[in-house]
Amino acid sequence: MSLAICPGSFDPLTLGHLDIISRAANMFDHVVVVVMANSGKNPAFTVQERYAFIQRSVCDLPGVEVDTYDGLLADYCALRDATAVVRGLRVMSDFEYEFQMALTNNSLHAKTETIFLPANREYMFLSSSVVREIARYGRDISTFVPRAIAADIQAKLCGKEIKHECG
Image (cartoon, rainbow, N blue to C red; front, top):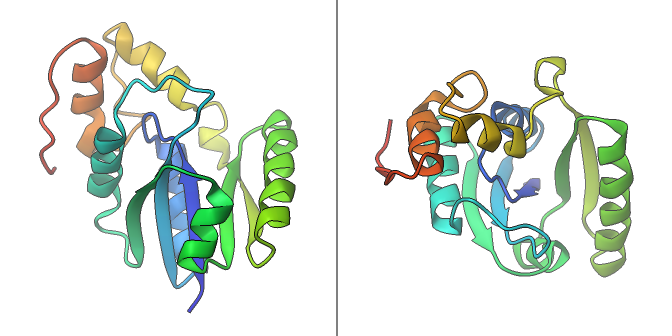
């Protein structure tokens, strides 16, 4: 069985992320979306919140699982015996960083290959930081994130408590 890992900070999950996850699910028998810690970022959402957002957003995708990991991606790939890491690319500057990470991960765990999927052109501009900025000003983000989580993202970024409910 082929297993792919879709890692990220997902702070928050966007429709661009969801598109890459869906496309990976069509390519592999099993996909694990793993919320990773990134020491270079100060996340707006807790790991548990991001996990819940993703869980609610992928519940209809067969063969997709959500997990969290606080360590190196290469170690997680070894732990799960993954055959691939799937990364989305929006612009050329993404490629430079992701290529460096792919080479590093491969040197740490040679059994896992990195596959780059280009962003769908409708999501090329979209990033989690753009979503956070729009939401902080109270603007509608429902065209940028899965509808199931839009209100909770908006509430948290506007200083309100989120519900953690399905749907």
